[in-house]
Image (cartoon, rainbow over all chains, first blue to last red; front, side, top):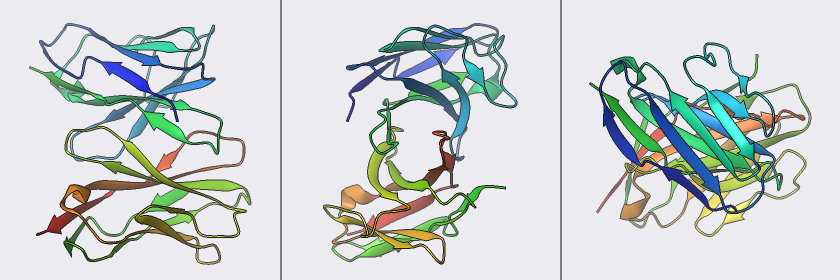
Length: 114
Length: 114
C-alpha cells in the first residue's frame, strides 16, 4: 500500500476565496485522483491528475473552478476556486498503485465555506 | 449503464455478532474488480478488501470476507465478530476493463451496539 499525506485536514473559508489542497505520496504512482464527497453523499470523481499534462475532468467539473497540478509522480494539488457554501464537502485524493487496481486514499480535507 | 447498488442505507448489529452488507453491480465487461471501503466519522476512506472477477475463491482479510456470487452479480461484505470500532459508513465500488476509475455505491451506515 501507499502512504498518502493530505493537507489541510480541515478548513473554514469565506466565500469568494480559494483553497489549495495538497496530496503527497511516499512512492511514485502513475494515477492520482481527486474526489468530492458532499454531506451525506457518496464519492464523486472530480478529475484524474496526470503527471506532466493537464488533468482529465469529469462531466460537471471544469478547470477554472478546480485547477489541478501534478508536477511529479508523488505530488498533486487541487484548488477550489471562488468558493461558495455549495463547495462545502470532503475532498479526497487517491492513488492507484497498479497492484490489483486498488486505490488508496488520503485522510481527506473537510472544507466548510461560510 | 454501469452501476452499483447498496440497498441498505443503515444497519445495526450487536457487538461480537456477524453482519452482511449487500452490494450488487451491473457490468457487461468480463474483467472487473470489486472493492469495499470503510469511512469512519473522521472522513478518511480506508480500503478493506478486493475481489477480482476471475478470482476463484472469495477474498478474505482478517475479519472481513467478500461473498462473491458472480452469476448474481453480488459482492456482499461479511464482517465477523463485530466491534464497536466497526461503526462507520461502508462503500462498495468497482471498476471494469482497462478503466481504472471507480464506480461507487451510495454506502451503508453500520452501527455496532454494545
